Image (cartoon, rainbow, N blue to C red; front, side, top):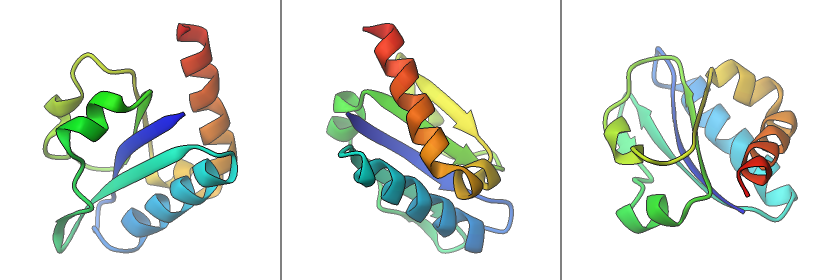
Length: 105
């Protein structure tokens, strides 16, 4: 499965990158392709391309603040959670993403 998304926290430092790391680790553990864009205090990093978004089976937004570029995901299956959820329960989160995608197919 291909997962892409964005992580962003209120301060734009620790939780943004922790959420990114936890989601990527959990997804890779089950064999998924994953890329998480971060929107932190130093701006946008790991920016998602149109192709990556188009090819994604599901979009995960682990965000605590308003993000820029959310309109890029129009027409895609989007799941929004807090960065805390992504950090504390990344395996359950990835499992839930699989359930949502499987229900669609």
